[in-house]
Length: 117
Ligand code: 5GP
Ligand code: ZN
Image (tube, rainbow, N blue to C red; front, side):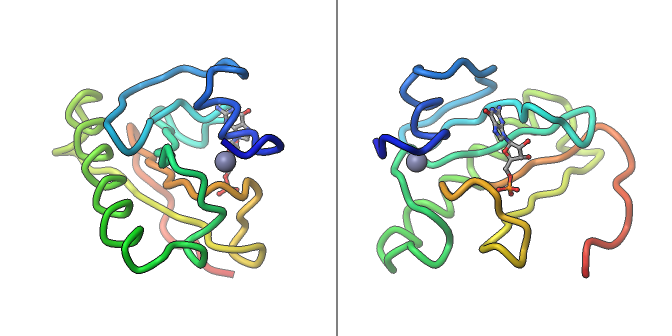
């Protein structure tokens, strides 16, 4: 728990959120400003600011856990076969605004093509 981190507060229950799924290593919540009918954030329980801050050991443990929970969420939401988009913004130029690593999962409609500069 990092005291000034909004996602740590959410994981700790100090800020309310809609929990969609969870595992030992990660929690899926509904994004507060959804960009698609399904828009979840898969957040590792451990505070890591961004992809750059993962140790090699974290990377081997946490990244698969994010994809495991995305797969479970996609099944639960019935979008696994129709398709879903996963996205991690890494750093300011990529558009990261919350510096606790998280993966977006978007689904439930045809995604717009293209997400470059
Ligand atoms: P980023 O831009 O860092 O990749 O994504 C941050 C995401 O967190 C945004 O999509 C934003 O809507 C979401 N977000 C920011 N604050 C909150 C919050 O307090 N609760 C929830 N559920 N989502 C949040
Ligand atoms: Zn945090």
